[in-house]
Length: 62
Image (cartoon, rainbow, N blue to C red):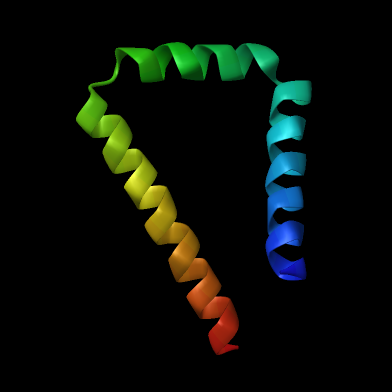
């Protein structure tokens, strides 16, 4: 359970850094996502999940 909480904390830190250091870039990215079709946004989300799972699997192997 501690590892899960650490993972969530790291995500919050990275998200916070993005909003603190480049808020206008985040705003433009959100506008671009709004113009994307729903299926494309869903594909991006599934791809991010797959990349995360793959990274964790590789880290566990070593």
